[in-house]
Length: 377
Ligand SMILES: [Zn+2]
Ligand SMILES: [Zn+2]
Ligand SMILES: [Zn+2]
Ligand SMILES: [Zn+2]
Image 1 (spheres, protein in one colour):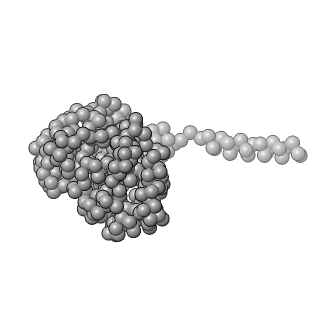
Image 2 (cartoon, rainbow, N blue to C red; image 1 turned 30 degrees about the vertical axis):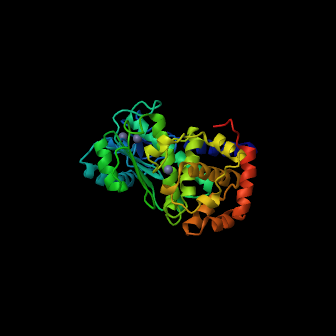
């Protein structure tokens, strides 16, 4: 009797197991209701960081960029809502049309991520590591997302603190750059132009002016994105126009020096002004001047707009921002937020760093003395 019960139990178990390993009814989709698009299988987009939409991927005649198709061999409910995804892609593509229409173009590459939109018009890759323009566009937005991650880490700012995404244009022709910069940055420029605030824009021409190679391109993006991101958070106030140019330009220099190892972008300083002065190696120059007692104190530069800052003032603005980010970790975001409320720098330092301006100046001297070397960059 016991043997029979055991035999019956094992029999029931086996029939359950045979049910569990049953072959899927549909050999095409394995009962998922969707199959991967074969045309797209060998053409992956090259982003290393997450991206949202790519106009090249959407060019696929079979899937429209969804990369999945509903299974044609069965009636299983699809695991992925292919139709909804396709509709979302079409509506995103519609949102890029004003750019195409303004320039009378149908061949611009559009790509976006959580923080950036890119319209890209180079026929050859400007980056050595990318084989063509499509791959290069993805790599460029990777670089921009890296700038966002660094800004978020420096300041504690979150995506929801941004008023909008930053629109980037990369042109191959000066004519397009001039037209696009006039329209979207409100500043006609043959090389680089930007608009700051809640919907920032950077438009640049690659191959001309000061953006001639890969390193120029990355440098320009890193520097200008620092301005754009800082102007786009919280109340979307560009501090460079609110007598807090020291933090606006200082942070842009800080980002450029950290990524590129040197500073070469000088917003709103004319070539003739620069031509008369020797651009320095920042750390060693601050160290040398501090040792010689030639310090420009923060109180002396904190009431100026970015356009009014001299080369020397920019040098020290960089160093004060360097000290805020590295020696007062986590305070940059509150400092920016307080300055955007049009509080003077002395009050904003007190609120965000919990020290008086005089104490900050003294702490800076100690920190810079221990951190900077006359032999460093
Ligand atoms: Zn199927
Ligand atoms: Zn792509
Ligand atoms: Zn496809
Ligand atoms: Zn700048």
